[in-house]
Length: 393
Image (cartoon, rainbow, N blue to C red; front, side, top):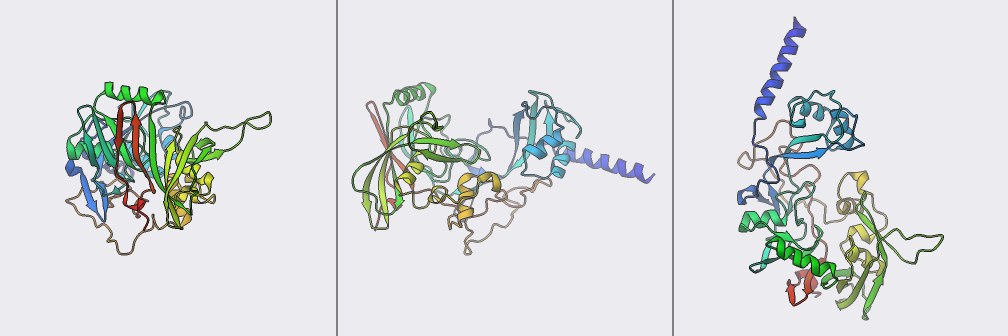
């Protein structure tokens, strides 16, 4: 009798959970809105929201139970969480609820419905520089990704521009890493974006950045011609100098950057950086090759960096944590966020609630001292003002 009552109670709890989950789940099609943001301690947060993450079963996943798949491939949450998520329908296969013992098949669609807590970014405005009929240029703040990626959806340049200016759709024509600031050019239509793409692919576009580096940079122009080998797993690049021969093969891609000193105070130098190619972390790695890395770039200031796969975070965050960087340490004078029901509703299954930021993203963060200042193409030039740190006093 007791077992029957327990089973009935468990079924009743599951049914109540299912009813509670009848929520409007957001997708990438849902635009960011101005009221989605909360500002606290110099950071821009996003009010947590419900979001459907979609993936498809690949060869490695095929034949695993749904719970084993998530527990092994997505280790940010416990196995018990995934069991509960499957039971209440927050994890589905091909749009259907499935049992915890379900074995997945190749190419099936897997949906994971989450209470989404986006990482905070620095609370800087995305300043519009030029607003032309076909082109928009902005000064991208450091720490803000350009477009949705990973845990970022609304805390992006595209999301903020849509929410605060109603500017959409936009088509970024070049990349800027999350921690890099400066000029970002966006086309307002696919035809203009394609025109920019043709200029870039034809090698007709010149790019200029400024960086604040360690030490006194040489007065004469320096050219670094060293292959870049990017390790996607660890999010870190290395430079390869030399030529391939019978015994040695260079794995990286050809890369070249020109450097010119603008000023120095004997401790730091401001350097103009002109990348001829566009490899991942190219300027950062090539400055490291000169012996003058970017002065707050913990990822390339030292070779003694803990891998991001070990800490389960981004490469730059792992480097800052392992190096004891003040850029990621919590500041004692900053007031901790205290939950307020007006900001968002707590989700009983969420592993981040009642915090506003996701776990592991509650520290202070600053951008790299690397800033894009100019792009020049056939009969067009776009510029961005220099940052405050570029003035050595």
